[in-house]
Length: 303
Length: 328
Image (cartoon, rainbow over all chains, first blue to last red; front, side, top):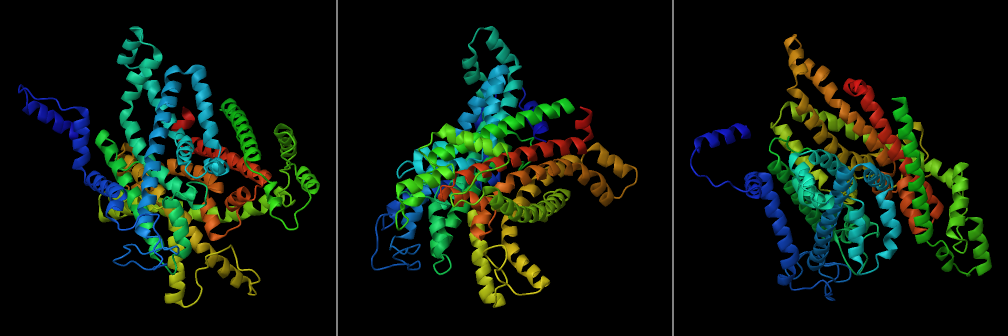
């Protein structure tokens, strides 16, 4: 459908000096034309705004304790109610949301970068490089990620969350790297890579200049979907005390605390759970719309 | 094919060995069984603690490699050692495997059958109201982590118990009630009451994944030539769809089923822990908290074996079901 439309448009504009739109602009236009993409982007932007600008308008900071209101339901004074300690749920939730968003974004970026590099090297060099890297990938797939993260968790002391992000990323990249490897093998046969090789460009430079940029659409979509995976994994791990450690708060720690008091104090659980679901949903919608935008011929919603 | 299989199996055996060894070394280096004795009153004398730890092969004064050799020797003889309390790991895990198996098999069957049905129906009427509804719902479900889903279900169930039924219809903890004196059917009902919530927790996510998967597979084959041929030779639309389209579209889903099963054997960790089922996943979390090195290592070995066996099974199933793979 799109193809014939494009051909038609080409024929119509025949002869006229038309500016060729850049690929990024085409993709962005396609992305924002889909309602999925628009909604997802708007909601996620709103979530970021809430997480980082919300504390500015809130009368309470996440360290404040209101000793006149313990476990109080939402009111004009405390928008989301208060906890057992007198902490303001709104302020604490936003604090946790900041951490979860940052952890999710960073872990996704690191893991996708890792997948791109490992997959591209394995696919480009083949031979022993490929065998070693593929074997390493398989090993990490077999080793239960949850187990390793949980055993190592005592190392993530307070304030050590960047370490946690790296560990999280270390267990998210394997499947993508296998896909990247397969695509790198076929990209290697393309004319522009062959040309670069015969011109004497060193292999590492070819990989970073030609192979990886040509897989960018896959990588961007993958990074987006990894954000939601990372947020979900972080939540589950933190729920059992294996992730973000106490002085820091995240969605996971908040949900763990909230679920204990949810029966008689629903506000401690439902706000944070709702925000989590909305955030992940928005990220998934963006990922899906991006996939369609990069590759209009692909069937929608393939996972 | 046979040579390929042997090579694959050898590769897997090496992977399992390395993964289990790494898990053991990591657990033995990071966990500290000695600290279990620190807060006992009266405090046991250090010599006693040392003797106990040595007997369990957990003494951190023994070099790590020597402990590893003792453990590996035991594993080769089929003995996973003892837990921190001195009970054999084998016995414990055997019982727990049964529990996990019961939970996972019910959840997986519910999830995959419903998921395939939903996906196939959605594909047949693409962009109809059912398709839109299920697409929206599966997006929503995929955004809800298990810990939130399980807790929401528990909250809903307690609310329903109090306000709708007036008695405990949904039981939220454990596999069965202790000391229940009821006949055979009483026990069956009791187990079902315990089973409902964890099964829903496990299956809802699976339904979402399976239905998306099945829908795409089905859409791919709906316009295929062999379906049109089936229609052309006079089959009704319904027959052509179920006999030819659905059957072909099921192949990848069956292989995915095998793979999910392997992953779930330890992947039901969160569900088990939250609903208090004493399965493998729950024991994994408990053993990390109780510094139980041998149990942690044994469970990771089982997990590695399960994942690889599942991926092998899904490859073989794919070859058995899809004639193109067999020929190629």
